[in-house]
Length: 418
Ligand SMILES: *Cc1c(COP(=O)(O)O)cnc(C)c1O
Image 1 (cartoon, helix red, strand yellow):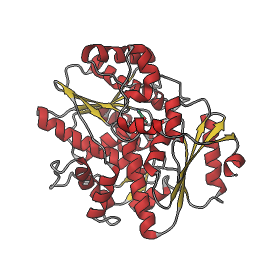
Image 2 (cartoon, protein in one colour):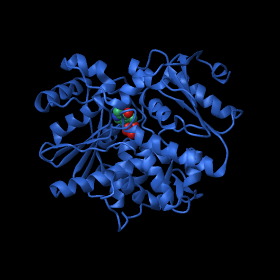
Image 3 (cartoon, helix red, strand yellow):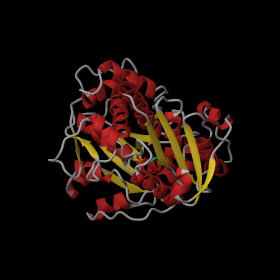
Image 4 (tube, helix red, strand yellow):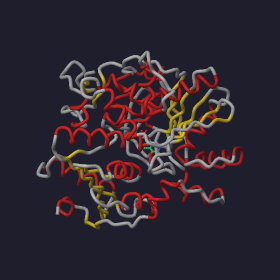
């Protein structure tokens, strides 16, 4: 499989390894596969999700990895359960049983396993530099912890992350170090950008969500769960996906391109209305993000829109392919309360956007709402509202028990470099 830049489709072709190591194409575009292979004829779900994922990913890694190597990477990366409980034909795809209890564990762990194996085979060392305001940094730190040849530096803004998020960023030792910046998330991003431009820091990588190695694994759980749904209910489900940078939903669109039985794809966004406004008006207007209860989706200029618009180039194509609804904070709260009162299920504010959209617009359809994070990560919102304690999953509890350590630095690049 060859990869091309979204900004130069007839230009240079790249191998998967080049695409992963470069992250971003030289022209500033995002890497996309040149085509989408059909689901392999011998695809099976009997050997569990990790094996199925390796079968689906093989055509994308052919020439770079042997089947056995890819299977080992998938077993190492996806070493936690994937679960899809349901109430009638209303299913919930729980992607939060990984070590940091959010779906980002899938992509971050896959990338970490891939890079470790690459460096082990081909030599060299690498430093991952990541600016984070929440979930990403924790998933990346956890995924890379203890891996050979790779160091990770996590840069996060003081007072802008919750207590539990901070613990997830700072509870590591060994190859992970964290830096609390006296400034905003934008300051952190600026410092990281400067480090990349400076070039005096050795091999730097960003591990951010536009890396193709974080996206491809997100395609596999949609193929897997759509077949699982079809086997249970005999219908092709509509996936309702809480979305911010729209990477997770791009994975779903790619799964449908491969032939997965999916009858609809719905992007549930918070009050950041960029995507539904585009579908309504035909004018794409990225903007400043606004702060909401579903903070991991506070994105006004979704970075993976470039990939979605590459797949569906005209407005007509786009609105035929996906739909999108915006959910405000009031309705996020309403949805958390209603789901708890009706079903006894506690959901996080991101998943609540998906549940709200299901309830409001897809009540009579076969649906899968994607649960992107465990509610225990957002206990400061959920617990006071419902008046109950959210049980903490064991993986998360283990992180809370560890000692926290980090450097406090001022908001300039020199402080980080020193
Ligand atoms: C990152 C994140 C999202 C948004 O996913 P995108 O791929 O950026 O659309 C939704 N929910 C949670 C909990 C997240 O951490």
